[in-house]
Length: 81
Length: 143
Image (cartoon, rainbow over all chains, first blue to last red; front, side, top):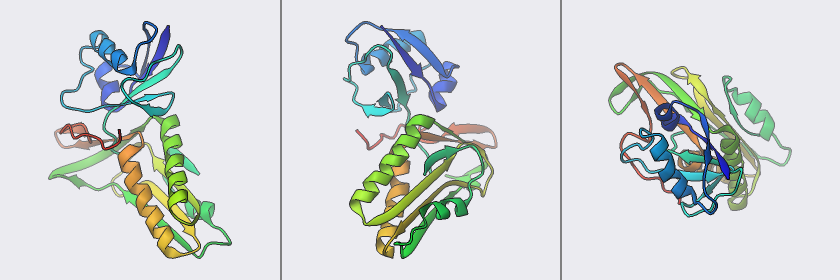
């Protein structure tokens, strides 16, 4: 199955793209997707930062199981205001 | 009205949006961009949002405020893209029957925005640029 990943801010810059489609095995968690993406994009991991996970525009925990067609975003520390 | 906008923010539009015959108070907050941060001279700012989720989260902030205080209406607009120094980056307006609720809900909204809404600020300064929040690895409070 496939999920759509969007990258923002520091992650977008490090990846050099705003979005990607990733093939994953059924039952994969969002945390596992993050691990897999680091193989595809060695510069993706920013040392020391803690990410939150969003699936279909809602915050989820790292164990959240992905479904085909999900939109996944890894959220670096926010700094609006 | 809960929005992100690439256009300059206009306070009056938010005030108009929360104007309500049952309100006895409107509190507003304007976050503005300043020319310095932690000893660095900031020459430009750039905001990026995950727009669909940011607007959803802004609306959630409004719903939570509505549960906690007796407010009439709330509006929040956050600027995205390049923002000149001194310009508003975020405006919040809250109307309520009484001022205590309006002030409290307004304060709550800006703190929640800073905590959980997926918007990021990049500071451009002489000699470099930084995505604020990512430089020291501080953890977020939301789990």
